[in-house]
Amino acid sequence: MPAEAAEIATGYAFTGEALDLGALLWGGQCLSGAQIRIPLSMLNRHGLVAGATGTGKTKTLQLIAEQLAGQGVPVFLADIKGDVSGISAPGEANDKVQERARDVGQTWEAKGFPTEFYALGGIGPGIPVRATVTSFGPVLLSKVLQLNQTQEQSLGLIFHYADTKGLELHDLKDLRAVVTFLTSDEGKPELKGIGGLSSVTAGVILRALTAFEAQGMAPFFGNPEFDVSEFLRTASDGRGQVSVLELPAVQDKPHLFSTFLMWMLADLFNNLPEVGDLEKPKLVFFFDEAHLLFNGASKAFLEAITQTVRLIRSKGVGVFFVTQTPKDVPADVLAQLGNRVQHALRAFTPEDQKALKATVKTFPNSSYDLEELLTQLGTGEAVVTVLSEKGAPTPVAATRLRAPESLMGPIDASVLDAAVKSSLLYSRYAEEVDPESAYEKITAQQAEVEARKQAELEAKEAEKAAKEAEKQARAAAKAAPQDASMVDQVVGSGIFKSLARSLGTQIGREISRSIFGTRRR
Image (cartoon, rainbow, N blue to C red; front, side):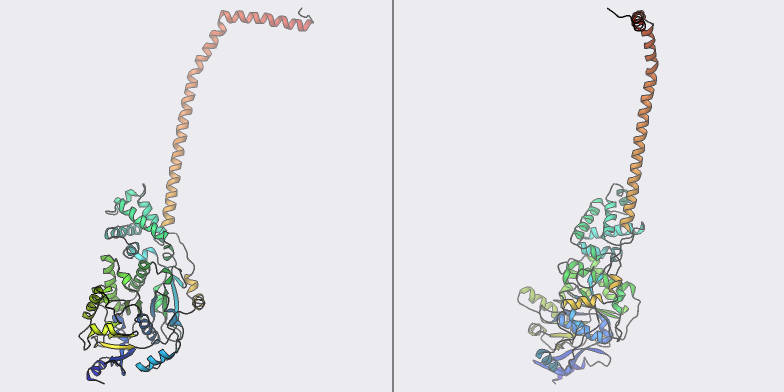
């Protein structure tokens, strides 16, 4: 082995438990005696798996995940394209697999790993994962709704108002009810009391919520809220549980699923105790298509990500970002990623060449011409540098990676569905519940207000009717003496008396005739 290659290999000769990535590439040869590894105790120092499309990033993710599970470390995987579910089934031996195993000195054995499958809001196959609007919070929700900084701050005020008024925000209709109330005639006075929230901004937020619901997003928010500590379980045989979040059904909603992954990570951060450095991490979280998380992100959102990544290490959680180039990840976050697996990059355009040069600058000094090497790597090959057991960067090593021992592809849909339905967690999270919250409370309050208004209106109408009746009665009473006086005058007049005598005489004659039988001639 050449002296330079031997020096690189020495940098990866760890004494403690480690994951095997592959064998050193030097001078166009694969040196199976020089194994490239990652110390298990350094997996909570986070990492990056990067490379152009088709260079093998997903297989590298699968390789690391199955070895972690094999050593008792729970793993979370975001399955964007639907091709990671194969980690639950034994792999299939073929000539390519056997050839790679010989090249890298791997004793390959087909294995499947204990796996749970999840789906956001139950859309797609998997145990439904939901979050309440309150736990999601205004910063993450602003990212999903694509609000600007002013609108994000206003949404924070709305959350504060709901909290102080005891209005629980479980699902989107709860939040919409609060915003609708604040923009109504009854609620506008409340706006003045929560500090600088304009009716116009509240209206913009309401429209964004309405459009968000119209896109079918409501199922992602509600109860029962998923307990992210489920991701920390181990199987009965001591292997780590692999949690696969199936995302193909929501591929067209990148802001949603990337932000939901951030919620899961933030929730873990808030709930886990401080543990410092461990012999092996409690959980390793793989964040696939990481560039989607940062696209269009607000300053507050980026600060939240940076803080979470920086501090969650001390809680025993490692985070691996999987993306195309390191420049997809903000510098403050990239600085926290101690373990690097860089697959090939393309340099077809000036922009590609710029990205290549930027990537090379993120690596330690190396014996390789990295700018040339990164464009010549084959599929399943990568440039690696990790943190040693002492926390120092290892020498840069061109590596031919091992083949995963689980199935490199998706499992059958019927098998996946059966695995979901047989899970003990399915009955816990499958059926959505809707407890009393802001929507019901505001609806009841508005119904009470409407009933009071109706009662007041009816009382006013009754009072008005009573006054009208009294007015008519007074008018009638005033007119009665005048009518009596008129009658007396008519009866007492000479004409009336004369007419009465005439009528009396005539009637008397008719009566006499009828009694005595006389007839008029």
